[in-house]
Length: 120
Image 1 (cartoon, rainbow, N blue to C red):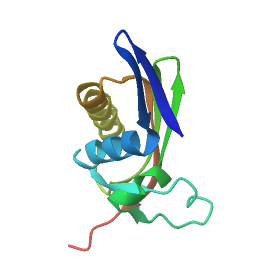
Image 2: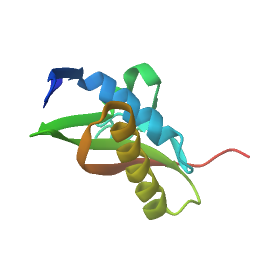
Image 3: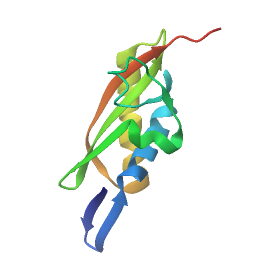
Image 4: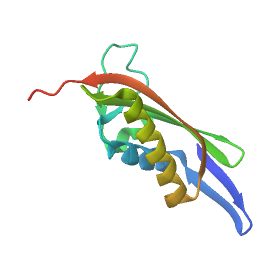
């Protein structure tokens, strides 16, 4: 599936995997994020950290008009304030997609798939 945008200069087609990779990379840079998780692993009871090439398994991109909606499934680190981490991820993903692709986001929804306790 791909995202189709229309500008005054013509049509632009962006693969949703590209948007998912950019959104996942932006989210991973935020404080408190351990990694991205698959959206289907909650029913299995195991939250596995996805690698960059598999971000599309944990990120859902949908298009409405010329805006996109992003659903991120993440794993946070123990001891962080989840609401602050989620807000930072939303802001960072929205900013990154706007700067890199010129894509406006209607919403960035965060789903916490797990909490990771480090073995310090």
